Image (cartoon, rainbow, N blue to C red; front, side, top):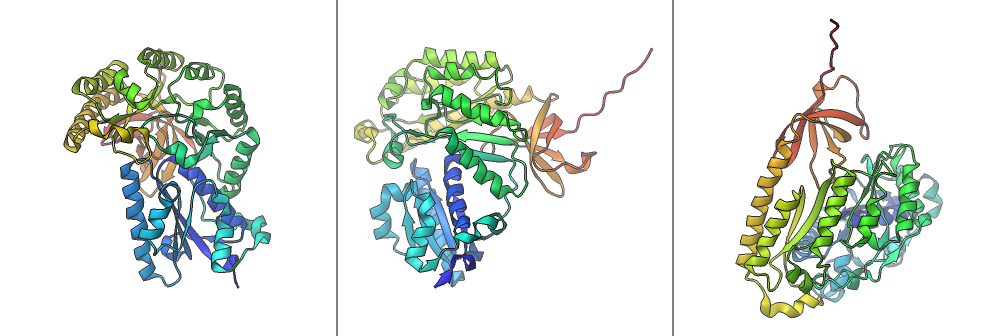
Length: 449
């Protein structure tokens, strides 16, 4: 029987940051069981694809990545490929029948069981005694940020969404579970400081406010943590109460992530989403009052069944009215088992969906360019995410890791040695494409008369 300590794994994570947390749990479980982590897929004995199935594009990416992974088996005699997560949970029967080349499958909610699945299926002797030095078996994580999951599942009834069917009912995590996640992250960092904590879930605002505050308070008291970021705030009245925490906790970054999905109350009713646009206006106004430098991220679904041109135009009015800095756009696609699937008779032609999405994207890019132009010449504190021979890449507090703008500096400009995770004051000089360019501010000299 082969030992786990003689085998290695590689995890490829698809989808949103919430999946990053699930991948970390798999990684931690495998390391504690004695497996080693490989730096590249072809160096591994087991390649695990943590999948996503939220929308059609995510499903297509999962299928594409799965077949690419299976193609690697032709270049490695030892490699075994497994698919885990949302896609498996949702399409388990179809995956078994149509992709028999996969060596193993695992759905959601069982990420910690992956070592035992591999042990049973491939006759592997686990090595739990290796847990004391398990960090030495891991590829070093040099990211200065960590994703921490606040809860699992969702109780919302959004007509376009199947997450409650995949992930189950809303289950909040208590502070002890949050501390456990933090300990896992710290154990894998080998002394690397974690400067930013990103709190994620399917429905963050459904956590009781005093529980959220307790978690924020916990991380606020950790010296190495400089920034705390909240993601996925469902737009209900409790967000107004949550915003009251901003003055109390300065480590909360000036950032509001609130997916509203549409700006037409008629379409929101069909989506079974909150329809009180007056409340949305109040939340945004209050957020900007609390933090004048705050930037807002939201998401829209374009081409929902029954969306008329007058509904579509309201998206433009909303963006213009609130000067939304960050926008995620999704083209509606019918999801089996969703309530909206019953609205297929009102479906919008695919060509119209694409045209509307492109038109709205162009409008927002032009608006964003105007907003970013105002930042040129201003100063910002950035966190250093990565350093190479020529450039330093960082982020402002208004930019979430892995999904938003990067600030780029010429490494030769720096008068001191910087490390990943350091905070640095810069002057924004320009922007190119999606990213900012910056320089180190010149020291001001005083003149006596």
